[in-house]
Image (cartoon, rainbow, N blue to C red; front, side, top):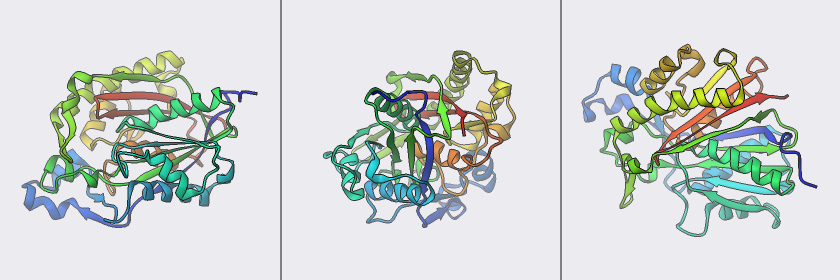
Length: 313
């Protein structure tokens, strides 16, 4: 029997943040910036960096272990594992296979990767819900792990002061805390060079990315709310990809919502790519006052996706 797709949703989230980090205030002289730029424009005071010997799969496993410690998940019952990353351990095999092996998941568990960046968790949430519903599955894992420290140039102000390493593991189950509605998706592939890794090194057109997000995200969220028949005033939180403080302030202003409803919270760990949204949502799972949440990821590709989450428990 195929599982009821309406019953599938987010049952728990585990987060892994590396211990080591670098203060952006220590970089002020190197990049000729001041405290106002760090606090008001960038918003990132400190970026976290994985250990040199930590692989992407190690970050993923640590996030799953954090989920295991804080929830009732039974790894022996997991039927599906999706890993979202664009910085895998190897070109092949897929990182999900390596994580599967390190966790000792069942052999009958599907395991595959999704190669997406900042929009990856939202895309992945739609994919895993549909995949599990179609195949009658009841327990799955959506893991995001995209350590940009592997590709960031330490002398590039546009990237090294912004991106931080992290991982998140989202448990999808038939006894959820949040269920999702319809999603929106979009791509402007003609502008893919705005955020690109060539010869192992990341390059970003910051102005191009900002203009893309400031233009596309507000209109996409309005479309999402219309599709799901939800009024903007009924949304408790807008969990937006943590691009920068100035970017989020601009999007909030264009949506005409208070900044605290679409907050920038990544000051102490940085832009963690596909993990930014689940890191924020993890803090709200036990907050019963948060009933309706909009999630929106946007960036590399240029790609975006938005979704709406409703609390059911």
